[in-house]
Image (cartoon, rainbow, N blue to C red; front, side):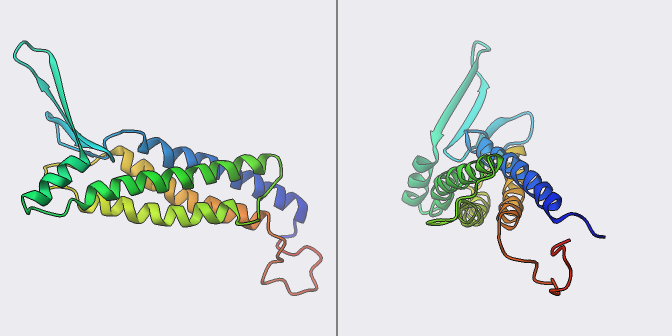
Length: 195
């Protein structure tokens, strides 16, 4: 299959920038206060990256919601010797690393629309890759070290996981599309390397 190398590069850049932008949205959106862990129906309780919340009907039938910071819960766990409260710190770490990597992905994808790629002092795709790998680890620690509550994983975590995997792929695709390196399998005789 011989295709024009320039047309192939243009298609690779177009695909990579769209994947990066969609992945950035999928990484940042779940970090904005949605419950990652949720109690089964009919209970309305769960954990976000920052707090635990519970809603129930009051005496007069009104909806009453209570919220408590994850850091407060972690402090109480340590005082009562029921755990370290690792989930609270992992939640904050997940938020910080996700925002940095999501913004790096969005910037790399946005600059790709102008046919620009930042290489120095460090490529935006490299920042995104390192951040996404760390974000995946911290998110799994957050989920795995939750307090002993009857909660299950909710849709924001699945959206987040999809965004992280797509972001890793998109950052690599974008870096490859803008690289000046020839295909490692090019034999030197073909006039269309990488095709």
